Image 1 (cartoon, rainbow, N blue to C red):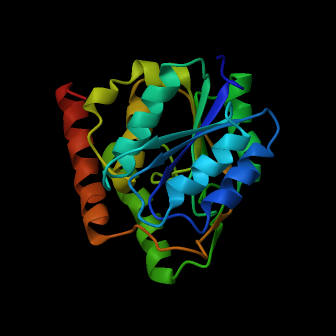
Image 2: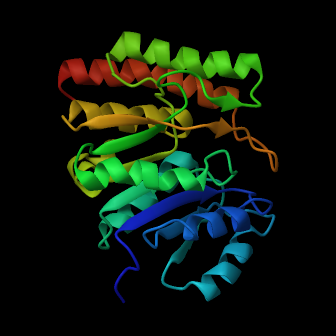
Length: 244
């Protein structure tokens, strides 16, 4: 059966029963008949069951992959990329399930990639100013500081280095050796941005407003922060040694 559209929105989930139905409904309402792939890491709160119920109404547009256990954000997206590349999708988006990313911004991310003005469009919280709602100052400083830190070490010309709301053209994912991408959490986003840039692709940052979740629990942890801090140095050293 052919895919319903050329655009796939990948949404990893773990315990997002309070948000997933609203997210799916909002994505499906966007122009272009977008398709959605939910990758659920064995959520005990019934997230997958809610997706399955919605899938029955939109079998050509909603897809679900269920994994055993909490395997992490990076591996979820890599599985989603594999799914997209095995099918006819041209524009592959990443998006959170907690409504911090506004589904109405999806056309603004797909647009530059579809028009050929960018190979990767990033929904940026920091380009042209700070647009984050309901974050404590410490969290904002950590996120913004990560961008400064990453740019200083790697030279990556991106303001929002840890952004998880974006659209790739499939040619980017076909060029990058995804088997070499090993990070999870925010480090995964940094690594994908860096590899895209080092491969010579055009990146554009599209200003978006990020709103902290109101339902469910954040997945942020100290381990995620540490991984991102070390990954920046690893990427830079690999690039210098020609082993990226």
